[in-house]
Image 1 (tube, rainbow, N blue to C red):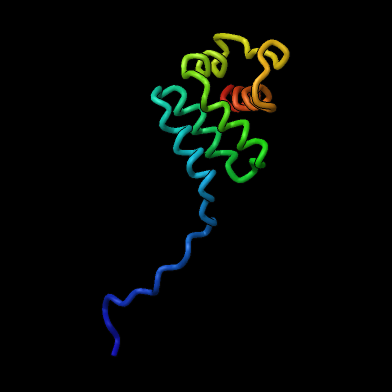
Image 2 (cartoon, helix red, strand yellow):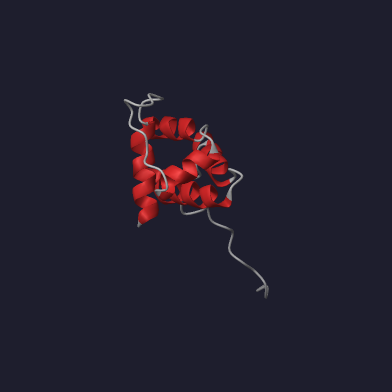
Length: 106
């Protein structure tokens, strides 16, 4: 017996699901409170999520603790990104800001 609306079973998605840490980071990056930062940070994460290492994720988590106005100023170039010598923070946070700024500038 042939049924008219028989369909094949659904297959698994093509890409593996993101782990909890990456999903949480993506959510935080896209729900900052300012649309400008949501676009810049969320866009960077979506584009590079699969290539980020644990140290990168740690730097991004620390970066997301910074105030929105400072992040927006640094990422858009309105203010220069401080050097690690001027403002020491979590290792890797300033290079990550430079990476994101370069990606946003493209």
